[in-house]
Picture 1 (cartoon, rainbow, N blue to C red):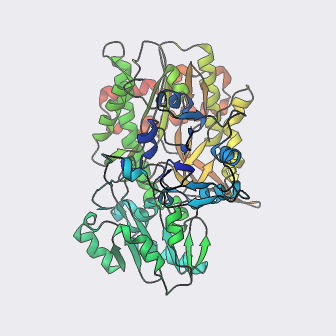
Picture 2: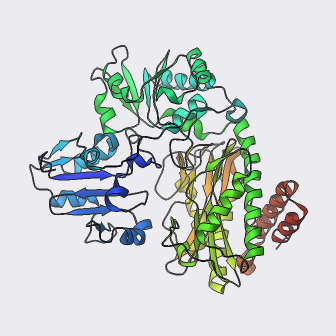
Picture 3: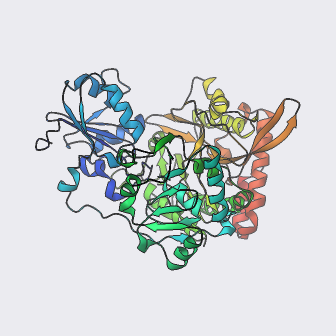
Length: 579
């Protein structure tokens, strides 16, 4: 920093694609600080080194930063503002801020500029001291591209490309820059294995009226797929040439980019003669609406996943106290049970296997140091999911080990009431997620309880388990929920130092009926796994809620039974008997 006259160095937990899952090559903050959480920003000066993360990771960060020289900053506390406010208060006028524009989103840079406006701050946006000092850095990931067959995708790549071009033409866009590998995988009916928990290939794409330039390492694309691409005007170019190509464009007038998903270096490389149109990627909305083939495959995938979960929970039920169990060993066993199916691609996120007080941490991840031994009593929360050729799953179940306390049963039942309320929601077309979020929270609010995360997120199709643009959250997302959208339904309650409870299923939106007041929509719950009746306080449920639970359990048994052994069916029958 001194050698380059940089006074402040700002490092986000990010990669060039501004994705949620990033490869080891770009895990700068874990290498620098020891903190392995998925959300963080580091600020370094000549006399200060601080890291900001959100409340999910406070306890974890305090442990992992110990002895690192980095100070954990908690923006919820008045004395410790977020990193932007800290920079505004502590950067002297005329100073220089350095950052690596390859991993800095355009929107984040604009917020930084606005916060420091009036201070005459100089920005160096190609500052990369990390590459010089990080010895033994992991190389960029390499995995082969594979075809995602139409039997799973539901639509040919030619159809998808045509629809993208129709949307571009409607909005007067000559070019569309796709920076999300998820968008590119969906559009071209391919998958890869470059990112943890997300079956994608590191790539960029530039879509035009006649060609699509695909920036990817050529060796990753098998010959038969490359030949197929050639038929549809998909030109493969080296991944590092993306910026250079953007700077040379002369035959187009407009280009669409998503500033939240485009890094600053790419943005700055766009030829100055091009008019930049800013909006979310049109492919993001297209892939959020699952087509009939995808919806049919999702139903089959839920059966595969439900069978694995049934066998997993049965094994716990029958071996607890007889076989040593820990959070990590149970995570491995669950993975093994999912992997028995030939369509299983891999886990869709790091399994949250959380026992007792660990379950009070919404994004807990067991490690060698924290790995808890599963005892004879208490609460076990299991949040897990898998990628299959025919869809992606994300499901949470909370079970009791031994006899639950009255408070545990009440908390569980209030969460379940909220879950049922959202599952049963009926709403007019055009409704946003934030408008129905309180349905899941009201039973908790009525009892002075709440949870600090969203109620639901969009889910990909053999792609990222967290997919936009739809969500169910108080955050105020303006995207309307539409038929074909797949979301999670996961209300919760957490009692710090004691336990956490979360019940999560995936729900898909469909048209219910047309009335004189317009079209109304509903949800269909597609996840299939029993809900622990031992944690239910029946006295807190009304008849409609009891009917929902009984109907859901009947569906779980009927859909899973044919793929279970006689012994497994008998066990599941008991778990799904009517209340």
